[in-house]
Image 1 (tube, each protein chain N blue to C red):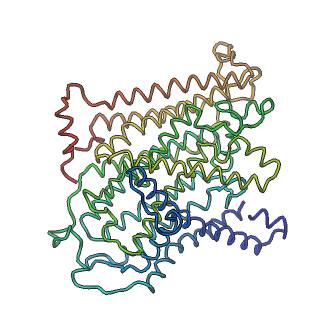
Image 2 (cartoon, each protein chain N blue to C red):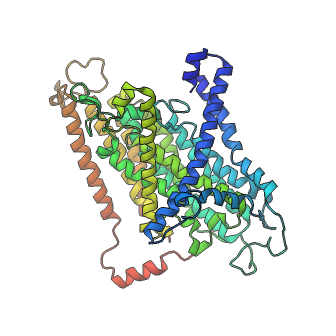
Image 3 (cartoon, one colour):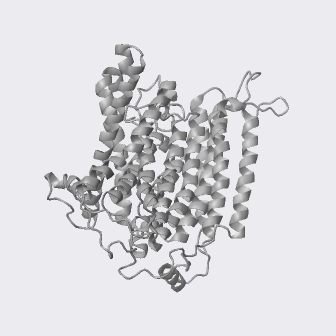
Amino acid sequence: MLQFLENIFGPSWIVSLIAFLISTTVILIVTPVTFMMMTWFERRIVARMQDRLGPNRVGPAGLLQAVADGVKMFTKENITPRAADKWVHLIAPLVATGPVIFLFAVIPWGYGLSPVDINVSVLFVIAVSSISAVGLMMGGWGSNNKFALLGAMRAVAQMVSYEIPAVIALLSMVLFTGTMNLNKYTELQGGLPILGNTLKDVIPDLGLGWFVFTPIGLVGFMIFFICILSEGERTPFDIPEADSEIVAGYMTEYSGMKFAVFYMGQFLFNYALSMVASIIFLGGWNFPGIPQLISIAPPIGALASAVVLGAKAWFLFFVMIWLRGAFPRLRMDQLMAFAWKFLLPLALINILSAALWLTIMLWCTGDCTQNPWVFTVGGINPLGWLGNSPVLRQLVGFVLTAIINAGAFFWLLNVNRRPAGETPADLARDQAFGTASLP
Amino acid sequence: MLAHYAFIGVFFIAAASFPILPLIGAYFLRPSRPTEVKLDTYECGLEAIGDIWVQFKVQYYLYALAFVVFDIEVVFLYPWAVAFNQLGLFALVEMAIFLFILIGGLVYAWRKGALEWV
Protein backbone atom coordinates (compact mmCIF):
# COMPACT_ATOMS: atom_id res chain seq x y z
CA MET A 1 0.00 0.00 0.00
CA LEU A 2 2.74 2.42 1.00
CA GLN A 3 4.74 1.64 -2.14
CA PHE A 4 1.65 2.07 -4.28
CA LEU A 5 0.72 5.47 -2.92
CA GLU A 6 4.32 6.70 -2.93
CA ASN A 7 4.55 5.83 -6.61
CA ILE A 8 1.60 8.09 -7.32
CA PHE A 9 2.01 11.00 -4.90
CA GLY A 10 5.67 10.85 -3.99
CA PRO A 11 7.05 10.25 -0.49
CA SER A 12 5.64 12.37 2.30
CA TRP A 13 4.61 11.66 5.86
CA ILE A 14 0.95 12.37 5.04
CA VAL A 15 1.04 9.79 2.27
CA SER A 16 2.64 7.29 4.66
CA LEU A 17 0.04 7.97 7.33
CA ILE A 18 -2.84 7.58 4.88
CA ALA A 19 -1.35 4.34 3.58
CA PHE A 20 -0.99 3.05 7.14
CA LEU A 21 -4.55 3.98 8.03
CA ILE A 22 -5.95 2.28 4.92
CA SER A 23 -4.05 -0.96 5.62
CA THR A 24 -5.03 -0.86 9.28
CA THR A 25 -8.69 -0.33 8.46
CA VAL A 26 -8.71 -3.15 5.93
CA ILE A 27 -7.12 -5.57 8.41
CA LEU A 28 -9.45 -4.53 11.22
CA ILE A 29 -12.45 -5.15 8.97
CA VAL A 30 -11.22 -8.43 7.49
CA THR A 31 -10.15 -10.09 10.76
CA PRO A 32 -13.50 -9.87 12.64
CA VAL A 33 -15.33 -11.05 9.53
CA THR A 34 -12.89 -13.95 9.33
CA PHE A 35 -13.61 -14.70 12.98
CA MET A 36 -17.36 -14.76 12.35
CA MET A 37 -16.94 -17.03 9.34
CA MET A 38 -14.73 -19.32 11.39
CA THR A 39 -17.30 -19.78 14.15
CA TRP A 40 -19.95 -20.59 11.54
CA PHE A 41 -17.60 -22.93 9.67
CA GLU A 42 -16.55 -24.79 12.80
CA ARG A 43 -20.12 -25.29 13.98
CA ARG A 44 -21.27 -26.52 10.58
CA ILE A 45 -18.37 -28.90 10.09
CA VAL A 46 -18.49 -30.34 13.59
CA ALA A 47 -22.22 -30.77 13.21
CA ARG A 48 -21.68 -32.68 9.95
CA MET A 49 -19.14 -34.93 11.67
CA GLN A 50 -21.56 -35.63 14.50
CA ASP A 51 -24.44 -36.32 12.11
CA ARG A 52 -26.30 -33.11 12.97
CA LEU A 53 -27.21 -30.11 10.85
CA GLY A 54 -25.70 -27.23 12.77
CA PRO A 55 -26.88 -23.63 12.49
CA ASN A 56 -28.89 -23.37 9.26
CA ARG A 57 -31.75 -20.96 9.95
CA VAL A 58 -30.26 -17.47 10.07
CA GLY A 59 -29.49 -16.35 6.54
CA PRO A 60 -28.49 -18.64 3.67
CA ALA A 61 -27.08 -21.91 5.10
CA GLY A 62 -26.91 -20.25 8.50
CA LEU A 63 -24.21 -17.81 7.37
CA LEU A 64 -25.63 -14.98 9.43
CA GLN A 65 -25.64 -17.02 12.62
CA ALA A 66 -22.42 -15.30 13.69
CA VAL A 67 -24.12 -11.89 13.32
CA ALA A 68 -27.01 -13.06 15.48
CA ASP A 69 -24.51 -14.31 18.05
CA GLY A 70 -22.79 -10.93 17.96
CA VAL A 71 -26.07 -9.14 18.68
CA LYS A 72 -26.71 -11.53 21.55
CA MET A 73 -23.24 -10.92 22.98
CA PHE A 74 -23.71 -7.14 22.80
CA THR A 75 -26.97 -7.25 24.72
CA LYS A 76 -25.91 -9.72 27.41
CA GLU A 77 -25.38 -8.61 30.93
CA ASN A 78 -21.79 -8.30 32.08
CA ILE A 79 -21.35 -10.06 35.40
CA THR A 80 -18.23 -9.30 37.38
CA PRO A 81 -18.23 -11.44 40.52
CA ARG A 82 -18.09 -9.61 43.82
CA ALA A 83 -14.88 -11.39 44.82
CA ALA A 84 -13.10 -10.67 41.54
CA ASP A 85 -10.32 -8.16 41.09
CA LYS A 86 -12.35 -5.75 38.96
CA TRP A 87 -9.56 -4.19 36.93
CA VAL A 88 -7.60 -7.37 36.26
CA HIS A 89 -10.85 -9.08 35.32
CA LEU A 90 -11.64 -6.29 32.85
CA ILE A 91 -8.20 -5.95 31.28
CA ALA A 92 -7.51 -9.69 30.86
CA PRO A 93 -9.48 -10.19 27.60
CA LEU A 94 -7.82 -7.11 26.13
CA VAL A 95 -4.35 -8.40 26.97
CA ALA A 96 -5.23 -11.81 25.54
CA THR A 97 -6.72 -10.49 22.28
CA GLY A 98 -4.73 -7.34 21.52
CA PRO A 99 -1.48 -9.20 20.69
CA VAL A 100 -3.39 -11.56 18.40
CA ILE A 101 -4.67 -8.64 16.33
CA PHE A 102 -1.18 -7.13 16.47
CA LEU A 103 0.16 -10.32 14.84
CA PHE A 104 -1.66 -9.43 11.62
CA ALA A 105 0.65 -6.42 11.18
CA VAL A 106 3.34 -8.61 9.59
CA ILE A 107 1.40 -11.48 8.04
CA PRO A 108 1.15 -11.13 4.24
CA TRP A 109 -2.25 -11.95 2.69
CA GLY A 110 -0.97 -12.53 -0.83
CA TYR A 111 1.53 -11.39 -3.47
CA GLY A 112 2.29 -7.73 -2.74
CA LEU A 113 -0.49 -7.65 -0.16
CA SER A 114 1.60 -7.57 3.00
CA PRO A 115 0.71 -4.76 5.39
CA VAL A 116 4.39 -4.29 6.18
CA ASP A 117 7.57 -5.89 4.90
CA ILE A 118 10.11 -6.12 7.72
CA ASN A 119 13.11 -8.42 7.85
CA VAL A 120 12.33 -9.91 11.25
CA SER A 121 8.67 -10.85 10.79
CA VAL A 122 9.19 -14.43 12.00
CA LEU A 123 10.78 -13.12 15.18
CA PHE A 124 7.90 -10.65 15.53
CA VAL A 125 5.33 -13.46 15.25
CA ILE A 126 7.15 -15.52 17.87
CA ALA A 127 7.55 -12.61 20.27
CA VAL A 128 4.03 -11.22 20.01
CA SER A 129 2.21 -14.56 19.98
CA SER A 130 3.46 -15.45 23.44
CA ILE A 131 2.06 -12.32 25.11
CA SER A 132 -1.46 -13.78 25.14
CA ALA A 133 -0.48 -16.17 27.92
CA VAL A 134 -0.27 -13.17 30.28
CA GLY A 135 -3.89 -12.32 29.47
CA LEU A 136 -5.03 -15.86 30.23
CA MET A 137 -3.23 -15.81 33.56
CA MET A 138 -4.77 -12.43 34.40
CA GLY A 139 -8.22 -13.76 33.57
CA GLY A 140 -7.78 -16.81 35.76
CA TRP A 141 -6.20 -14.92 38.62
CA GLY A 142 -8.55 -11.94 38.58
CA SER A 143 -11.72 -14.06 38.55
CA ASN A 144 -11.03 -15.31 42.06
CA ASN A 145 -12.52 -18.68 41.23
CA LYS A 146 -10.98 -22.12 41.74
CA PHE A 147 -11.80 -23.39 38.28
CA ALA A 148 -10.55 -20.23 36.64
CA LEU A 149 -7.27 -20.37 38.51
CA LEU A 150 -6.78 -24.05 37.67
CA GLY A 151 -7.57 -23.37 34.04
CA ALA A 152 -5.16 -20.44 33.92
CA MET A 153 -2.34 -22.49 35.47
CA ARG A 154 -2.95 -25.25 32.96
CA ALA A 155 -3.18 -22.81 30.08
CA VAL A 156 0.08 -21.08 30.93
CA ALA A 157 1.92 -24.36 31.55
CA GLN A 158 0.67 -25.66 28.22
CA MET A 159 1.47 -22.50 26.30
CA VAL A 160 5.03 -22.24 27.57
CA SER A 161 5.64 -25.96 27.00
CA TYR A 162 4.43 -25.93 23.41
CA GLU A 163 6.06 -22.63 22.59
CA ILE A 164 9.53 -24.17 22.70
CA PRO A 165 9.01 -26.89 20.06
CA ALA A 166 7.12 -24.38 17.90
CA VAL A 167 9.91 -21.84 18.06
CA ILE A 168 12.57 -24.46 17.41
CA ALA A 169 10.59 -25.83 14.46
CA LEU A 170 10.52 -22.31 13.02
CA LEU A 171 14.21 -21.98 13.82
CA SER A 172 15.00 -24.97 11.63
CA MET A 173 13.22 -23.22 8.75
CA VAL A 174 15.03 -19.93 9.44
CA LEU A 175 18.27 -21.90 9.31
CA PHE A 176 17.16 -23.66 6.14
CA THR A 177 16.33 -20.42 4.31
CA GLY A 178 18.60 -17.92 6.08
CA THR A 179 15.84 -15.32 6.33
CA MET A 180 13.26 -14.21 8.87
CA ASN A 181 11.18 -12.29 6.34
CA LEU A 182 7.81 -13.97 5.74
CA ASN A 183 7.59 -12.50 2.22
CA LYS A 184 10.86 -14.15 1.19
CA TYR A 185 9.62 -17.61 2.16
CA THR A 186 7.20 -17.65 -0.72
CA GLU A 187 9.86 -16.71 -3.27
CA LEU A 188 12.03 -19.55 -2.00
CA GLN A 189 9.28 -22.15 -2.37
CA GLY A 190 8.71 -21.91 -6.12
CA GLY A 191 9.78 -24.52 -8.66
CA LEU A 192 9.62 -28.26 -8.10
CA PRO A 193 9.10 -30.38 -4.99
CA ILE A 194 12.37 -31.15 -3.15
CA LEU A 195 14.52 -29.44 -5.82
CA GLY A 196 12.96 -26.00 -5.36
CA ASN A 197 14.17 -23.31 -7.70
CA THR A 198 17.35 -25.11 -8.82
CA LEU A 199 15.99 -26.15 -12.24
CA LYS A 200 14.11 -22.92 -12.85
CA ASP A 201 15.82 -22.33 -16.23
CA VAL A 202 14.91 -25.77 -17.59
CA ILE A 203 11.42 -26.40 -16.26
CA PRO A 204 8.79 -23.63 -15.89
CA ASP A 205 8.05 -22.48 -12.35
CA LEU A 206 5.36 -24.83 -11.04
CA GLY A 207 5.18 -23.18 -7.64
CA LEU A 208 5.40 -26.52 -5.85
CA GLY A 209 8.76 -26.29 -4.06
CA TRP A 210 6.96 -26.25 -0.72
CA PHE A 211 9.19 -26.91 2.26
CA VAL A 212 6.74 -29.48 3.55
CA PHE A 213 8.04 -31.81 0.82
CA THR A 214 11.54 -31.83 2.28
CA PRO A 215 12.27 -34.01 5.33
CA ILE A 216 13.25 -30.98 7.42
CA GLY A 217 10.13 -29.06 6.46
CA LEU A 218 7.88 -32.08 6.98
CA VAL A 219 9.09 -32.65 10.53
CA GLY A 220 9.04 -28.90 11.19
CA PHE A 221 5.49 -28.62 9.86
CA MET A 222 4.26 -31.53 11.96
CA ILE A 223 5.76 -30.06 15.11
CA PHE A 224 4.58 -26.54 14.36
CA PHE A 225 1.05 -27.60 13.51
CA ILE A 226 0.70 -29.65 16.69
CA CYS A 227 2.00 -26.67 18.65
CA ILE A 228 -0.54 -24.36 16.99
CA LEU A 229 -3.29 -26.73 18.05
CA SER A 230 -2.00 -26.62 21.58
CA GLU A 231 -1.37 -22.89 21.81
CA GLY A 232 -4.80 -22.16 20.37
CA GLU A 233 -6.26 -24.65 22.85
CA ARG A 234 -7.92 -26.80 20.24
CA THR A 235 -8.99 -30.36 20.93
CA PRO A 236 -7.14 -32.68 21.74
CA PHE A 237 -5.21 -30.05 23.71
CA ASP A 238 -8.13 -28.09 25.18
CA ILE A 239 -7.25 -29.05 28.76
CA PRO A 240 -7.29 -25.45 30.10
CA GLU A 241 -10.99 -25.24 29.30
CA ALA A 242 -11.91 -28.88 29.75
CA ASP A 243 -15.62 -28.42 30.38
CA SER A 244 -16.12 -31.81 32.00
CA GLU A 245 -13.47 -31.06 34.63
CA ILE A 246 -13.13 -27.35 35.29
CA VAL A 247 -16.25 -25.78 33.73
CA ALA A 248 -14.65 -23.36 31.24
CA GLY A 249 -11.21 -22.85 32.73
CA TYR A 250 -10.03 -19.27 32.87
CA MET A 251 -13.21 -18.12 31.10
CA THR A 252 -15.55 -19.46 33.80
CA GLU A 253 -16.42 -16.04 35.28
CA TYR A 254 -16.67 -14.25 31.95
CA SER A 255 -19.92 -13.38 30.29
CA GLY A 256 -21.24 -11.13 27.54
CA MET A 257 -18.79 -9.13 25.48
CA LYS A 258 -15.74 -9.86 27.63
CA PHE A 259 -16.22 -13.54 26.90
CA ALA A 260 -16.69 -12.80 23.20
CA VAL A 261 -13.42 -10.85 23.13
CA PHE A 262 -11.58 -13.81 24.66
CA TYR A 263 -13.23 -16.10 22.16
CA MET A 264 -12.33 -13.87 19.22
CA GLY A 265 -8.72 -13.79 20.36
CA GLN A 266 -8.59 -17.57 20.43
CA PHE A 267 -10.06 -18.04 16.96
CA LEU A 268 -7.97 -15.32 15.37
CA PHE A 269 -4.88 -16.78 17.01
CA ASN A 270 -5.63 -20.06 15.29
CA TYR A 271 -6.14 -18.28 12.00
CA ALA A 272 -2.99 -16.14 12.28
CA LEU A 273 -0.84 -19.14 13.07
CA SER A 274 -2.48 -21.17 10.29
CA MET A 275 -1.48 -18.37 7.93
CA VAL A 276 2.07 -18.43 9.26
CA ALA A 277 2.24 -22.21 8.86
CA SER A 278 0.89 -21.98 5.31
CA ILE A 279 3.43 -19.32 4.41
CA ILE A 280 6.45 -20.99 5.95
CA PHE A 281 5.77 -24.64 5.22
CA LEU A 282 3.01 -24.93 2.62
CA GLY A 283 4.51 -22.61 0.03
CA GLY A 284 2.61 -19.42 0.79
CA TRP A 285 0.68 -18.43 -2.34
CA ASN A 286 2.64 -20.79 -4.58
CA PHE A 287 0.49 -23.07 -6.66
CA PRO A 288 0.79 -24.27 -10.27
CA GLY A 289 -0.19 -21.33 -12.47
CA ILE A 290 0.05 -18.58 -9.88
CA PRO A 291 3.65 -17.48 -10.70
CA GLN A 292 2.70 -17.19 -14.38
CA LEU A 293 -0.50 -15.31 -13.56
CA ILE A 294 1.46 -12.84 -11.40
CA SER A 295 3.96 -12.16 -14.18
CA ILE A 296 1.23 -11.72 -16.84
CA ALA A 297 -1.35 -9.69 -14.92
CA PRO A 298 -0.08 -8.56 -11.48
CA PRO A 299 -3.43 -7.34 -10.04
CA ILE A 300 -5.29 -10.55 -10.97
CA GLY A 301 -2.29 -12.57 -9.85
CA ALA A 302 -2.28 -10.81 -6.48
CA LEU A 303 -5.97 -11.58 -6.02
CA ALA A 304 -5.47 -15.22 -7.01
CA SER A 305 -2.49 -15.49 -4.66
CA ALA A 306 -4.61 -14.17 -1.78
CA VAL A 307 -7.26 -16.78 -2.59
CA VAL A 308 -4.66 -19.58 -2.66
CA LEU A 309 -3.07 -18.52 0.63
CA GLY A 310 -6.49 -18.12 2.23
CA ALA A 311 -7.50 -21.57 0.98
CA LYS A 312 -4.40 -23.10 2.56
CA ALA A 313 -5.01 -21.37 5.88
CA TRP A 314 -8.68 -22.41 5.86
CA PHE A 315 -7.66 -25.95 5.02
CA LEU A 316 -5.42 -26.02 8.09
CA PHE A 317 -8.32 -24.66 10.13
CA PHE A 318 -10.51 -27.40 8.69
CA VAL A 319 -7.95 -29.98 9.84
CA MET A 320 -8.16 -28.49 13.33
CA ILE A 321 -11.93 -28.95 13.32
CA TRP A 322 -11.51 -32.43 11.92
CA LEU A 323 -9.20 -33.32 14.81
CA ARG A 324 -11.80 -31.91 17.20
CA GLY A 325 -14.37 -34.22 15.68
CA ALA A 326 -12.07 -37.23 15.80
CA PHE A 327 -10.03 -37.20 19.01
CA PRO A 328 -10.79 -37.17 22.73
CA ARG A 329 -8.96 -34.81 25.06
CA LEU A 330 -5.48 -35.68 26.31
CA ARG A 331 -4.64 -35.87 29.99
CA MET A 332 -2.39 -33.26 31.59
CA ASP A 333 0.56 -35.62 32.09
CA GLN A 334 0.27 -36.93 28.53
CA LEU A 335 0.16 -33.37 27.25
CA MET A 336 3.33 -32.30 29.05
CA ALA A 337 5.18 -35.52 28.25
CA PHE A 338 4.30 -35.14 24.58
CA ALA A 339 5.78 -31.64 24.43
CA TRP A 340 8.95 -32.29 26.42
CA LYS A 341 9.76 -35.90 25.58
CA PHE A 342 8.70 -36.14 21.98
CA LEU A 343 8.32 -32.80 20.21
CA LEU A 344 11.28 -31.02 21.81
CA PRO A 345 13.95 -33.70 21.09
CA LEU A 346 12.54 -34.15 17.59
CA ALA A 347 12.74 -30.39 16.97
CA LEU A 348 16.33 -30.28 18.22
CA ILE A 349 17.32 -33.15 15.92
CA ASN A 350 15.55 -31.33 13.11
CA ILE A 351 17.85 -28.33 13.63
CA LEU A 352 20.88 -30.58 13.37
CA SER A 353 19.63 -32.16 10.16
CA ALA A 354 18.87 -28.70 8.72
CA ALA A 355 22.45 -27.70 9.53
CA LEU A 356 23.72 -30.87 7.85
CA TRP A 357 21.66 -30.21 4.72
CA LEU A 358 22.99 -26.66 4.51
CA THR A 359 26.55 -27.85 5.02
CA ILE A 360 26.16 -30.19 2.07
CA MET A 361 24.68 -27.39 -0.04
CA LEU A 362 27.35 -24.84 0.87
CA TRP A 363 30.37 -27.14 0.88
CA CYS A 364 33.09 -25.67 -1.27
CA THR A 365 34.72 -27.73 -4.00
CA GLY A 366 37.49 -26.43 -6.24
CA ASP A 367 39.24 -23.20 -5.27
CA CYS A 368 38.36 -22.42 -1.66
CA THR A 369 40.87 -19.87 -0.42
CA GLN A 370 38.31 -17.36 0.89
CA ASN A 371 35.48 -19.80 1.60
CA PRO A 372 34.75 -20.81 5.23
CA TRP A 373 32.84 -23.88 4.04
CA VAL A 374 35.68 -26.33 3.56
CA PHE A 375 37.76 -28.66 5.64
CA THR A 376 40.58 -30.66 4.12
CA VAL A 377 42.14 -33.86 5.41
CA GLY A 378 45.78 -34.09 4.28
CA GLY A 379 45.14 -31.77 1.35
CA ILE A 380 42.17 -33.81 0.14
CA ASN A 381 38.65 -32.41 0.21
CA PRO A 382 36.54 -35.20 1.80
CA LEU A 383 33.35 -34.05 0.09
CA GLY A 384 35.00 -33.13 -3.21
CA TRP A 385 32.92 -35.71 -5.05
CA LEU A 386 29.84 -33.50 -4.63
CA GLY A 387 31.07 -31.40 -7.55
CA ASN A 388 29.29 -28.24 -8.65
CA SER A 389 25.88 -29.70 -9.43
CA PRO A 390 23.23 -28.42 -6.98
CA VAL A 391 20.87 -31.23 -8.01
CA LEU A 392 23.23 -33.95 -6.80
CA ARG A 393 23.81 -32.04 -3.56
CA GLN A 394 20.11 -31.62 -2.98
CA LEU A 395 19.43 -35.30 -3.54
CA VAL A 396 22.28 -36.33 -1.20
CA GLY A 397 21.00 -33.88 1.42
CA PHE A 398 17.44 -35.12 0.96
CA VAL A 399 18.39 -38.76 1.50
CA LEU A 400 20.60 -38.04 4.52
CA THR A 401 18.12 -35.75 6.29
CA ALA A 402 15.25 -38.13 5.50
CA ILE A 403 17.17 -40.98 7.14
CA ILE A 404 18.06 -38.86 10.19
CA ASN A 405 14.57 -37.43 10.69
CA ALA A 406 12.76 -40.72 10.12
CA GLY A 407 15.22 -42.46 12.44
CA ALA A 408 14.71 -39.81 15.12
CA PHE A 409 10.93 -40.05 14.76
CA PHE A 410 10.77 -43.81 15.25
CA TRP A 411 13.46 -43.78 17.93
CA LEU A 412 11.50 -41.22 19.96
CA LEU A 413 8.28 -43.20 19.48
CA ASN A 414 10.12 -46.20 20.88
CA VAL A 415 11.59 -44.25 23.81
CA ASN A 416 8.15 -42.97 24.77
CA ARG A 417 6.46 -46.36 24.49
CA ARG A 418 4.67 -47.58 27.60
CA PRO A 419 6.78 -49.98 29.71
CA ALA A 420 6.58 -53.63 28.71
CA GLY A 421 4.63 -56.05 30.87
CA GLU A 422 1.72 -53.68 31.37
CA THR A 423 -1.55 -55.57 31.24
CA PRO A 424 -4.63 -54.25 29.48
CA ALA A 425 -6.24 -53.87 32.91
CA ASP A 426 -3.45 -51.55 34.04
CA LEU A 427 -3.86 -49.57 30.88
CA ALA A 428 -7.60 -49.23 31.33
CA ARG A 429 -7.24 -48.14 34.96
CA ASP A 430 -4.62 -45.62 34.00
CA GLN A 431 -6.78 -44.22 31.25
CA ALA A 432 -9.79 -43.98 33.53
CA PHE A 433 -8.17 -42.39 36.55
CA GLY A 434 -4.90 -41.06 35.26
CA THR A 435 -1.64 -40.94 37.13
CA ALA A 436 -2.32 -37.43 38.33
CA SER A 437 -4.19 -36.96 41.60
CA LEU A 438 -3.53 -33.34 42.55
CA PRO A 439 -4.37 -30.46 40.20
CA MET B 1 12.64 0.66 6.22
CA LEU B 2 12.03 2.95 9.17
CA ALA B 3 8.59 3.78 7.76
CA HIS B 4 7.70 0.10 8.11
CA TYR B 5 8.35 0.22 11.82
CA ALA B 6 6.26 3.39 12.00
CA PHE B 7 3.43 1.33 10.54
CA ILE B 8 3.92 -1.22 13.29
CA GLY B 9 3.62 1.61 15.81
CA VAL B 10 0.37 2.83 14.24
CA PHE B 11 -0.94 -0.70 14.05
CA PHE B 12 -0.02 -1.33 17.68
CA ILE B 13 -2.31 1.48 18.79
CA ALA B 14 -5.09 0.20 16.52
CA ALA B 15 -4.67 -3.40 17.69
CA ALA B 16 -4.61 -2.43 21.35
CA SER B 17 -7.75 -0.30 21.08
CA PHE B 18 -9.61 -2.71 18.80
CA PRO B 19 -10.88 -5.13 21.49
CA ILE B 20 -11.90 -2.15 23.65
CA LEU B 21 -14.47 -0.91 21.11
CA PRO B 22 -16.95 -3.81 21.46
CA LEU B 23 -16.66 -3.55 25.24
CA ILE B 24 -17.62 0.13 25.06
CA GLY B 25 -20.45 -0.67 22.63
CA ALA B 26 -21.74 -3.38 24.92
CA TYR B 27 -21.58 -0.98 27.88
CA PHE B 28 -24.32 1.13 26.30
CA LEU B 29 -26.44 -1.75 25.01
CA ARG B 30 -26.45 -4.32 27.78
CA PRO B 31 -28.79 -4.48 30.76
CA SER B 32 -27.34 -4.31 34.24
CA ARG B 33 -29.41 -5.87 37.01
CA PRO B 34 -26.95 -7.27 39.52
CA THR B 35 -28.36 -9.29 42.39
CA GLU B 36 -26.65 -10.68 45.45
CA VAL B 37 -26.67 -14.26 44.20
CA LYS B 38 -25.69 -13.38 40.63
CA LEU B 39 -22.44 -11.83 41.79
CA ASP B 40 -21.38 -14.88 43.79
CA THR B 41 -18.33 -16.84 42.72
CA TYR B 42 -19.42 -19.74 40.54
CA GLU B 43 -18.83 -23.19 41.91
CA CYS B 44 -21.16 -25.67 40.24
CA GLY B 45 -24.26 -24.07 41.71
CA LEU B 46 -23.25 -24.51 45.33
CA GLU B 47 -21.87 -21.88 47.65
CA ALA B 48 -18.12 -21.54 47.22
CA ILE B 49 -16.32 -23.61 49.82
CA GLY B 50 -13.02 -22.56 51.35
CA ASP B 51 -10.24 -20.46 49.95
CA ILE B 52 -9.57 -20.28 46.23
CA TRP B 53 -5.81 -20.26 46.73
CA VAL B 54 -5.48 -24.02 46.32
CA GLN B 55 -2.15 -25.82 46.27
CA PHE B 56 -0.48 -26.45 42.95
CA LYS B 57 1.84 -29.16 41.85
CA VAL B 58 5.51 -28.27 41.98
CA GLN B 59 5.80 -29.59 38.41
CA TYR B 60 4.40 -26.34 37.08
CA TYR B 61 7.52 -24.58 38.34
CA LEU B 62 9.90 -27.25 37.08
CA TYR B 63 8.44 -26.92 33.62
CA ALA B 64 8.65 -23.14 33.88
CA LEU B 65 12.36 -23.40 34.75
CA ALA B 66 13.02 -25.72 31.82
CA PHE B 67 11.08 -23.30 29.63
CA VAL B 68 13.31 -20.38 30.61
CA VAL B 69 16.46 -22.39 29.81
CA PHE B 70 15.24 -23.38 26.36
CA ASP B 71 13.79 -19.99 25.55
CA ILE B 72 17.15 -18.36 26.18
CA GLU B 73 18.80 -21.05 24.10
CA VAL B 74 16.52 -20.08 21.23
CA VAL B 75 17.53 -16.43 21.62
CA PHE B 76 21.13 -17.49 21.01
CA LEU B 77 20.25 -19.80 18.14
CA TYR B 78 18.29 -17.33 16.01
CA PRO B 79 21.19 -15.00 15.08
CA TRP B 80 23.29 -18.05 14.30
CA ALA B 81 20.57 -19.47 12.07
CA VAL B 82 20.22 -16.24 10.08
CA ALA B 83 23.96 -15.75 9.58
CA PHE B 84 24.71 -19.43 9.00
CA ASN B 85 25.85 -19.00 5.37
CA GLN B 86 28.60 -16.54 6.22
CA LEU B 87 29.83 -18.09 9.44
CA GLY B 88 31.26 -21.28 8.03
CA LEU B 89 32.14 -24.63 9.51
CA PHE B 90 33.65 -23.20 12.71
CA ALA B 91 30.35 -21.70 13.88
CA LEU B 92 28.54 -24.92 12.98
CA VAL B 93 30.82 -26.95 15.24
CA GLU B 94 30.53 -24.39 18.03
CA MET B 95 26.75 -24.35 17.83
CA ALA B 96 26.66 -28.14 17.73
CA ILE B 97 28.64 -28.19 21.00
CA PHE B 98 26.23 -25.63 22.51
CA LEU B 99 23.23 -27.68 21.38
CA PHE B 100 24.67 -30.91 22.75
CA ILE B 101 25.25 -29.31 26.15
CA LEU B 102 21.58 -28.33 26.21
CA ILE B 103 20.46 -31.72 24.96
CA GLY B 104 22.57 -33.12 27.80
CA GLY B 105 20.61 -30.91 30.19
CA LEU B 106 17.33 -32.17 28.77
CA VAL B 107 18.47 -35.79 29.12
CA TYR B 108 19.54 -35.09 32.72
CA ALA B 109 16.18 -33.52 33.59
CA TRP B 110 14.41 -36.44 31.93
CA ARG B 111 16.46 -39.04 33.82
CA LYS B 112 15.98 -37.20 37.11
CA GLY B 113 12.24 -37.31 36.57
CA ALA B 114 11.80 -33.53 36.36
CA LEU B 115 9.61 -34.02 33.30
CA GLU B 116 7.29 -36.53 34.99
CA TRP B 117 3.82 -35.40 36.01
CA VAL B 118 3.48 -37.30 39.29
